[in-house]
Figure 1: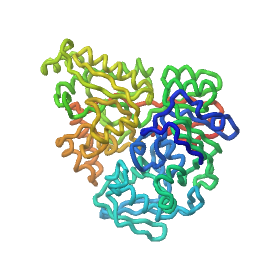
Figure 2: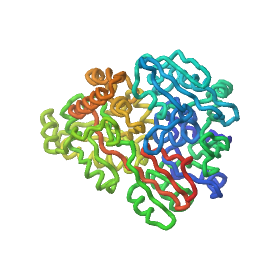
Figure 3: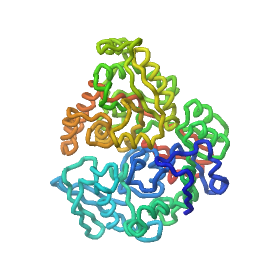
Figure 4: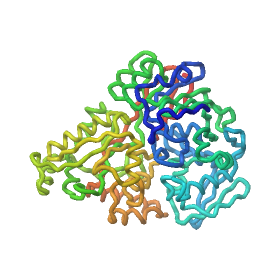
Length: 509
């Protein structure tokens, strides 16, 4: 693998329009190759550590190189992965997993149950840097008997095996990692997935080669190039010029235009991703009148219709319709007149507005910046003045983990497993590094639900949390995203509700 240090920036900033860096050696069209103009750069090769590990979009690259413990189909259903069978013991205080035989790492060595134990033990180590260490730290006292791995659990976790198909749920090679260390792994990552890393230029591209020994079958395309193009207009230029074969997350007006062109195909699918605005429990957000006014003055239907050309589903909780705890009876009506009245009670008006800062990405998701601009305009009409700060998505992760987000911050929340713990749970639970609102009342409601074994009671409890959060305006949900993908007609692409665009599922048309 070839690796250069050019443009090394924490968070993986990319030279958006400057894909010339890629050069003909990675971009040229060739038989059996496919190039993807991708919307985010890869900052790290360890899929279990740091902010990138919980970036939903970047999982497409990780899933191409590494295997997860448990697999997931495009419809979000689960399927055997490296772990073929799994379950809880009758007492609910331990788990068992049967590990697939005859799996090889990219370096030719065998994947063993010991790799499973090491990966889970490392993920659960508080010193590992795993952003959801508290999930994996539930397991201990691992034992191996043939291909079966068992472990004790501190408490029953109904979403544990779902996490094994989700963020940071990857199997890494113990012997190789311990031999080369973290720095060596960054220089030459080794996984067991459908593709092997062939070349990587930070902030520019990664080129992958098909794994000839992949247990799931050799992928259809021999070569895959992820070209890091964070600017939406630049991704449009990539696909229209033919320099790339596939792209995603482009402006919807461009999607509608491009899909009508000869040689190009467009596909949209509702995803498990939702657009939302975090509210941080700092002034002026401690004033409930301000929070309710923020929510009531945003016309979500108008945003979807005008900015997203109808490609989106307005939502009022952090549960999309495909999530297990979705409750359509929980609504937050659009009422700007009432919003102005609430602000007046706190001494604010259009002539004396409440002021705060809102942070957002620009080009990471379709119309993200434009959406925030429109929302700021809606707020201004009722007596809210918000200054916009633009940052890269990696900066958002850094600030959120340190509980230093602005009073309001736009984010694209991905919940590929559809469980309420991974939507409202981690977004609103104070001890979670992924929350912005951290208060005891919410924590007291959420805390008992983590280990609830009665599924009906568990889901009802999460719906109650959703209602409480909505009734107290502790977050501003906006919409469920519809992912736009444009590709050459010579390539068959299989979209996924998770939003993860996986080239191993591509094939020649």
